Length: 269
Picture (cartoon, rainbow, N blue to C red):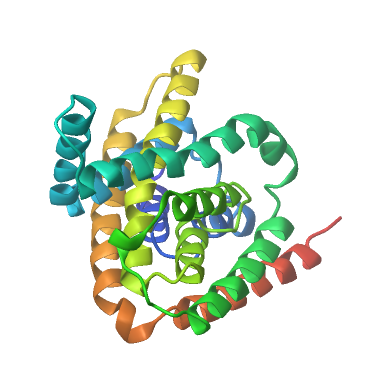
């Protein structure tokens, strides 16, 4: 793969994985508008590993406490907030994994079009804007119940529809449940880790079954760039979130989604 393609695609994945703007909406642009060739399954695995490394590194203290607390509870050592959070991440991941196993083939065959991505980008962008406007911000992460987690988990499953944005829909659900902006965003980032791990593992199994020779230089560079850009993205987003809110992302989604639909309409039948 050309170096320029590696850099652009890795940065797109890293920057858009955690922003509420839809990574699939951006990844379709090089292939559809610039006629770039498909980057291949190995590269997809690499950038997933990169974004997973970024979220685990950024929230390393939280994840270490979470794992320790969960293992301690499982071994009979008593419960804690972090043990409860560990169970919440497991429960919240189940709907997306189940939906992925059931509908992955249908989505790949019928929903990965520029029209669907454009419409989903606009529709879920409007929903994000409404949720941010109507937010009450009366709750923090420690106030969450398992019923809240199931709602956010089911919302995350909707992100299988290209153009939805995993972070966007989970933050939307969190805001609608009364979470503060930063609490909704942090839980969305926590919840991304097991799902990215599951998706990356699934893609790795596909890669092994295909028996392809991995382009290790491309993979290493893609993973590194996606990790660095994702780490920076998480930091900047959390720092600026209360200052700028969701509206810059909502407006951007409306423009991007409208542009994608417009380009689709101009494509030859």
